[in-house]
Length: 539
Image 1 (tube, helix red, strand yellow):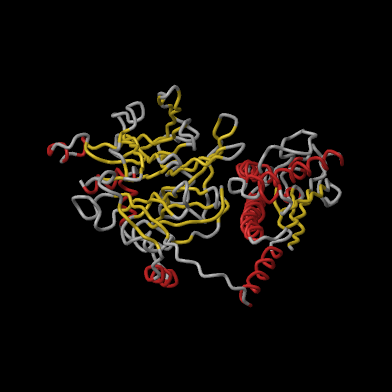
Image 2 (image 1 turned 30 degrees about the vertical axis):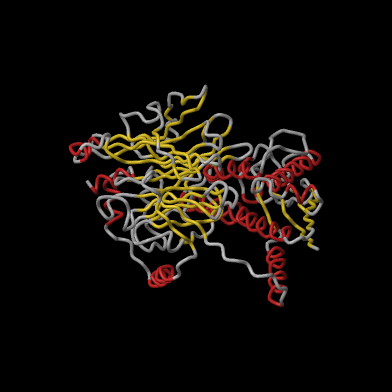
């Protein structure tokens, strides 16, 4: 029964579960040193197991708290609590529950209606929009080989009830594979659905993928890449949009035992090297389903089967834990030489990022428009661009064979990784530095220059360059729930625009509309479609 409980918790095939337990991962010496350091360096974090109102002797996981103090989670337990049914796997099920967090604690959990918790399935692994009017969740069944296969479903809340769920398309639910553990991220002009799958063309067993939802449909899923996904398993994604940070669990990377919680800054398939969350978030057992309190970033939840849980067996089942970073009393700030050096260092770091270059698809945003502004955020243009990588490889290598074809595809791959994705990572770092400067009372002026490839007439390209600058302005205005708006409105943050059109484009770039390989898909043309943050002044 312990094996069954754990397998159900993951909702993947037993073969994947067993491969994760065999310890085939070879740990290098430097990795082992890092792991030992992580074990010793206990963080100032208080961990508490949630009360018996939430945790039972069975498994509870996937904790999400909403702004109105409604708490959703999933529980694996027998359909009834008779001694007979506890003994047999076929009487166990997973359901999604909700509770209210009040000053006196959690209210008695109530399962979502049978519209969602259909007894034919294991219903689990959910995500919702902020208003809880849309729910994505997993439904799992055993196949003919008795392995669990999961698919993603959606339901809308209308007229005070959940509508009949609809299974997502085959684009998301690839036949013959498991698709589970969704997490929804909402942007101004598109949504991103992160999820876990063992579909083909992945990197390991279970990988984290994402799909862009726009204009009523999901785009083709894209793997988060080798920075996040390993030859092992990566699961339970949670994305903090305010900090542009992904939290997930992995049985590889620098795990101190079992599955550990990691974090990485970035988005889509552009990520910094994942960092282990450390002790006490992680233990020698399995730790996952990390989430953050919506009203207090110092608090949050995760699930673990570490010792001293509520189960009838030490490590068979999972409980939900709450964490809180301990806030030490701050001493009165004293300006010292170190403080001055730190300030100088930060300004130098900002200037070292310049020129900060960000790239765009051909004629984006808003193709064929003559406007100089756009409602689109650079984030959504980036997601569209990254989704086109395979098309760029195909078109740029068209007509080539063998080594020449492979080299052309590799050139495109390197451009997307080294230029497109790296540019976004630099933008997130720049945004953090900029916010720190403004919070310290500085007045900052930045200059953004826009460029275009030479495919169109000069005036059209100037307007296109202006739209590209506008998308970055939208990114800044919407960053971290609009944290820069106060500074923009008070003129503490000033953004100057310099749309150049194609006047700066290399004469070596083709302007022949009939030659799309060179005028659209080539590296030379791609390098011209950009904006640059070129100047930074702080006083």
